[in-house]
Every structure is written in structure tokens, then in C-alpha cells.
Image (cartoon, rainbow, N blue to C red; front, side):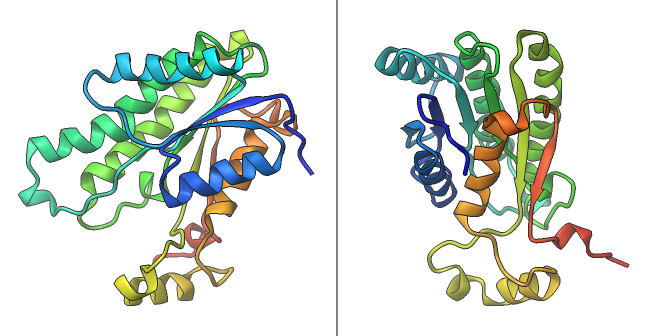
Amino acid sequence: MIDLRGRVVLVTGAGGTIGAGISARFADAGAVVVRHLGRADGDLRTDAARIVDEAVARHGRLDAVVNNAGVQPVEPLPDMTIEQWRSVVDTNLTGPFAVTQAAARHLGRGGSITHIASIEGSHPAPGHAHYAASKAALIMHARAAALEYGPRGIRVNTVSPGLVARPGIEEQWPEGVARWQAAAPLGRLGTPEDIGNACVFLASDLASWITGHDLVVDGGVTARPTW
């Protein structure tokens, strides 16, 4: 029901399962979708500027950005190297910082930036110290950016997914999927389109007075008491 015809949206990390779902939902809403399929390499600021500039050069404008590119390796904290820590933080946090800074130069009033964070930003899992920390920081970056870009009419929010289905996940992690389904009040894993729907909403005029907000999309898992 949301009409984004005439708007140009940049989605990073669009080659992954969630990124593809986000891109598809924006396309369904009529937006022109620029899909960045990889993740930032080398000089993050230079790479981010190139991605944004190419989108604007090709389509003449930029209306919304979804910072979806990210990694989620598993490594116990006692064994984690500084290189492993930096790799996750550079991709999950520094990358969105650089893309946000570059995109904001082109976004006008009504522009929207959405970071894909995670419920692990407040509920960490074992082996994910670097990932959880990067997502917690990403949520706070969005709030800080909302504060500073708000006077220009640019909104910045986060979407924090829970466990999202991907091909093979039930075979690779059967006990985890079963535990999630038992814990989630809605009784299922999320779909990439569930995350895309949240992003489309936040980029639309329906969310014109929403900024600095973390929209949790987890089937209700974080509502369940843990004691």
C-alpha cells in the first residue's frame, strides 16, 4: 500500500538473503533500487563516497539509504584476535558511518537512512561479542545521526531483526531454529520480506515524524521473560 514511485533507494549488502528481501520490497513499492552487492573494502570512506556518487550520477537523486551490509562470524571472546574484532567493527559499524556521511550530502528534506542492526545489540549471544558490540554501537550511531541531521529534515533509524530464515538454516542449526520457534510468540522465523517491510515503512511518508528509533522485528522474542 506504500507508494515510493519516483524515489531512489540505495541498499548495501543487497546480495545477501536479507538484502535481497529489502531490495524486493522497495521495488514492489515502486522505488528505483540501487543494489550494492558487496561490502566496503580498503578505504571505507572513499568506497562509500564512490557507491553513493555512482547512485546519484546514474539516477540524478537519492532519497533513501538502507545500510544492510554486515558480517556475523562466530568466535569465542577469549580466543578473539584484534584483527577479527576490527574486521567486524569495520564492516558493521564504520561502513554504515561512512555511507551515512556520504549519502547525507545528497539527501534533501524527507530523506531517510536506515541501519540494519540486530536484537543482539541488546541481547548478545555466545561467540558474538564483536557482532553484538558493533550492532549496539550502530543503534547509538543512528540516534546520534538523527540528532545532527534532523535539522536538515533527514531521518535516521535502525531496524533490529531477530532470526531470519535463509536457505539451509534448519539443516545447519536445527536446535537453534527449534528453540527460536518455541520462544517466539508468533511461532516462526522472520522472512527477508518482513525486514524489507519495516525498511519500506521507515523510508515512507508514513514515518515522517519517526527518527532516532530502533524498530525491533523479531516475532516477539525479546518480549519473553528470561527469568
